[in-house]
Every structure is written in structure tokens, then in C-alpha cells.
Length: 217
Image (cartoon, rainbow, N blue to C red; front, side, top):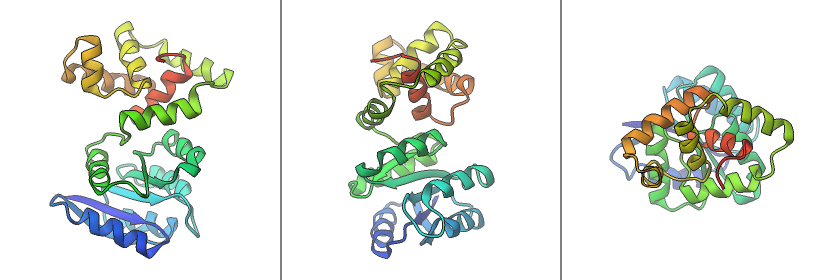
């Protein structure tokens, strides 16, 4: 079972998310929190696998809670609940190691799929959503960020850079494999190597590095 925590200061939002998630046979909501501080405490206490965390909460906001969980409970995968009006916060969450982001009005199937993906160690962003975030914030990187990214990418092999470029375009492993005439399993192996070499926590962070370095579209 995937053990989930829901953190949102609106009881109706929490109730709706809980109802959707508990409809899945492999997901169990083990805790709920109205603020970030309680979310951090409950996530550690209940050995949570995935935490759904709203950005705007009292006492401790979602981004601070994400950072605190990264320090004290790194095994917890954090999915950020957001709206398109909070895109700058989304970028910060992804750069700080968040497992992805969801809009509060996401379809039930997408919510369940996001939790499953996060629990499996994957960042949850559809290819289209990845392109949206990367294009919005990294298409014109600051020069210093670009220099840093190019230095990091220099450690990769040509094949790894080719895979990284496709991550920057938001392609899935399967789509990248078709583009590069590789199996999906081989692409997955390359992605694991890339994340390790770039010291990235997930493929979204790697995609941002790719765009900062000028790879991809």
C-alpha cells in the first residue's frame, strides 16, 4: 500500500482528495494536516510514502515544509498542490526536490496516477506539463545559471547528453527511446546515470539543467 498524507488548510479540499485516493486499492490515506508544520510531523510519525502538500498554508507554507521534509525525511516524496497562478513557486518546488506538481482541479485519474508515479520514484509531470514549466521558466536562463549547467553537462557522454536533451523537451522514456532508436529500458538506465552524474533528485530537475545548458528545443 502507498501511504499518503494530505496537507491543505481547506477541509473540503482534503476531503475531496481523500475520497479520490481511497477509491484506489493500492493507496491508503494515513494522515491529514491543516498546515505545513503538522504535515512535517505527521509525515515522519506515520512513515508516509507520498505527501500531497498545498503551497499556501498557515503556520508553515508548503515550500518550507517541502524543504524541511527533504532535510528530515528524505524518503517522503512530495507532490505540490498548486494553481497556474503560482508557477514561480512550482519552479522553486521542483528545484528543491519536489516529486512534481498537480493542479487542484486535476482529474481523479491524474491524481491517483501522480501518487503512484511519485511512490515509484518518478517525478509526476506529463510531457506536456514538463514542457510548459520548462519553457515558462528556463527558456532564457540567467548567464550564471547557464554556465553552471553547461559545466555539469560536460561530465556526460554524448549519448547521455542526447537523452538529457530529450528530457528537456519533456519526452517520456518510451518517446525518447523511439527518437533515439533505443529500448525504453535502455533509456531508463541512461536517465538513472544522468540523474546521478548531475546530482538531480528527479527527471524534472534534469530537464531544467538541460534547458539551462541550452540542450533541447
